[in-house]
Image 1 (cartoon, rainbow, N blue to C red):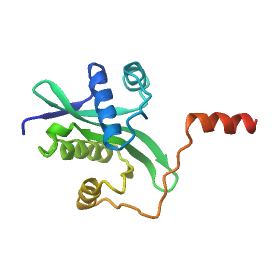
Image 2 (tube, rainbow, N blue to C red):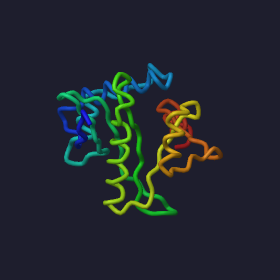
Image 3 (tube, rainbow, N blue to C red):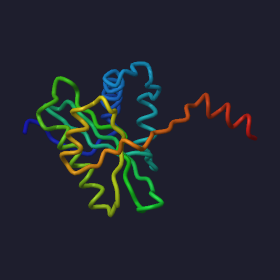
Length: 160
């Protein structure tokens, strides 16, 4: 293994953002990223972080990351949401993605979580097949819902 997995640190904020942007391009949403390095530092590395990260590092360079946070399932209890799992394109296939994924699952298990959940695009067959091979269930019948900032503002202004 030419890389290590470690907890993300504030010094990794730019590398984390770079991976988020690369993932957005891969997912055909190149202009969707609004967060900044400052947001990542404030939200991930303050006294009350909103997320945790693991990073894959090779030769002192971050080549991948997993970003996740705790949530609560009314059916199961304490859970983890894996927001993003990303390895830079030039380093895919070396096992870093699986190592990051394993780190998140181990974290969840060691912290008594009852579930780890995430979304995957239906056209990302490699990811879908990988997740299924690890025992994950990929639900075709569940739909992801998002309310963007503009629609949230409009809804709240109309329903005060």
